[in-house]
Length: 111
Image 1 (cartoon, rainbow, N blue to C red):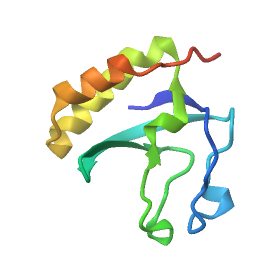
Image 2: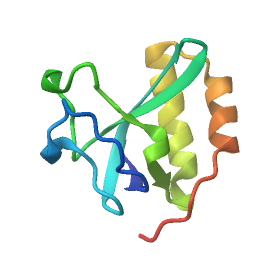
Image 3: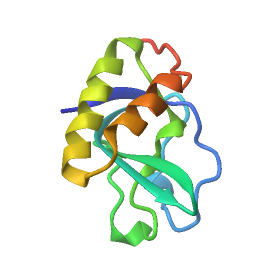
């Protein structure tokens, strides 16, 4: 499953990530996996992109922050489905993620 998104924040690229693996403002991508973890009491949500896979050379970074992307309003349900699928794989609390997605300001993006 792939969810369409567009980059809305390409600032603050970590130095260990090569430029060719970094996202570009306004470029369109496809989210293939959703990750969530709590670090120092803060919920961190990340995504893997089909077009920009991060590998071990980018360590410790292996995902992009979800907040770097806007999801097309037509794909919000698809994002929820992907979160649910990844939740079952990652044993993450789906309700807290769904609440977070619903409260996020998701920008409408052109096709």
